[in-house]
Length: 524
Image 1 (cartoon, rainbow, N blue to C red):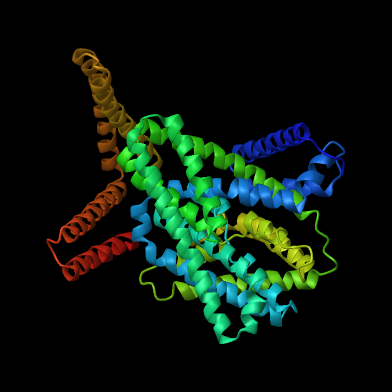
Image 2: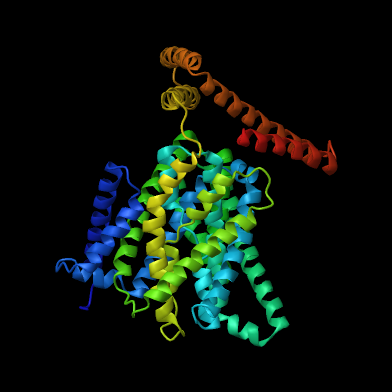
């Protein structure tokens, strides 16, 4: 390939961005999952020779370039954006299934695929468990976009996204241990097992510390500024800084970013961000995540076509079957003891556990002299391709077939009216805030507030009429209100316990009762 200067690299990056944006726009226009469309079109472009695209394909499909773009450039941004918007309260409510899937399920999947790779696929011990780690990471982008389009239960979406964010961190740690330390641990026997467990715990724990400390520090920083461009820069520095700092001390960069972003998006937003700042930070990362995902999935499609299959179709089909079975075992086993978790949700989580760009990027990062590297690349690429195309395209029909929380009649109209009420309320609150800050005269602000209140009153009347026509919608909203009241009860007990008004025993008992009520509400 000809030598490229920075100008040519920029031109190719811009062209790649335009191509990805165009495919994404078309997919969204036809209401199809854009990641899957990008992978398919990328594979087609990779298979067919287009002279104008050859320099671009040759450049971005280099292993070093692909790994840098996915892992260093885009991974912190994608993890940060997703974690920033995860409501901590919802995560805490659903912590048991998320922990069970992200830790127990990931570890079980890793072991099943690892042992199967060794005994059934004929891979070396190291290569088998590296493959197990690669197949443990899940990518929720396609599934969550489908969830949003058909309105599945929010709790299910939180569990899927929470599992993916934390199991990515687990998968990266397992990959590093398997690729670079496994043989030495095996040679040490039981001492090696203990050392491996200690290293695993240390990497995860240090990631939690780095992410927690930076997330808290940057959250405090927001209290001293009311300047959303600056606070967007804070978020960029936080995401990439926590990732790179954690990696530099051999901790989990993925875990560090997830924890830092969750703290910044919840605690930081609560104590130091105005509505304008929250809106603009959210919008900025929406754009960044869409751009990153579009480029990533197009690159996956292009990269897949660069790998020779070496007449290993039997091995490829066996690997796909092994990964599917391991995923099923991991999901159903890890959720088996969790009470009142719908069986239909388990089916969705199982089939929706798609593999993505992280698996490919990690596989490409293996040294060229790594034993079994070529086989691992082939297996990883084809499992990812099967996952994104076959599973990705069949998730939506499966959700509809299982009847997972279809939208009630009148719900779209209600959501529209509710959005109107919220935006009018937000406008009124902002007028009050700006009036005090800029010393705007009260008659002028009251005039504008009155206009908004009249609009709000009109919409509220429409909501009441909607309730009369759709009683099931009224019951659903009543349940939602009760749910929020139970969250408030849970928080009140926490405060009483923290202030030492009640004992830990009483607090645990009361909070357990509240959590049971919340779970029952979700199951009704």
